[in-house]
Length: 303
Image (tube, rainbow, N blue to C red):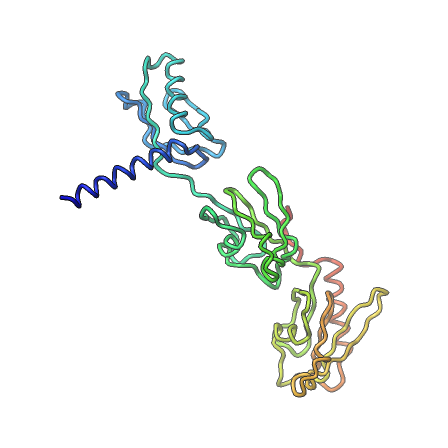
């Protein structure tokens, strides 16, 4: 018996707390409410959804602005409208929230699963990235990401600093209706060719070395002449500089001077023979620099 009394007391307390919270809560878009007119079932509405612009449709009255009102304020507004329209003399209106809106964020651009997702109150930018499956590392330009609020305001974000340098100032709180956009990296790129399994364009990052680049491209150790690996770099005056890299000395003797840092637009080439095939190299260079001139691979949609 004591257990039953305790259970009933807890239920009453929870109900009272819910009513207090609901009374102070202001309705938002996508909240679902129930409108009851005591003694007038034909005027009641069991399920009404607050629209994006904050309006609801009430039987006979029509559209009413509900967004931003408490349930008590909305009850008074609906009752007053019925009186003004001379439909009911003393309407008794009850408004109950049956389902609270679920905040959503859109994660677009170069992430694994772009789309719109529900999130929890208190979630941040990192949570949004997780909902989107994370960035596409070789294609995302993290330094120029941005967040757009529902009111149209835009906030620049440097996700590189957040993800790689621990700058928590970039980890903003999410708001309902936010859009997080990660653009494509079209500037800081480098090319790996020759005896590698995955030749192609890759995203350059500060501190990237020849060994990092070849690890990404998976070099062919069976046919590659690692001692004849080299980097071709275009100088500001338009000429090319060829830097020979002896990976044999790097791997076998630990000569870290061979593991040079790369710069944007560098071409890393792993030769098949003792003498590099410069015709092949210059063909790759021509294609690479032509792609950069034409900006091939730029994103199809730009905000």
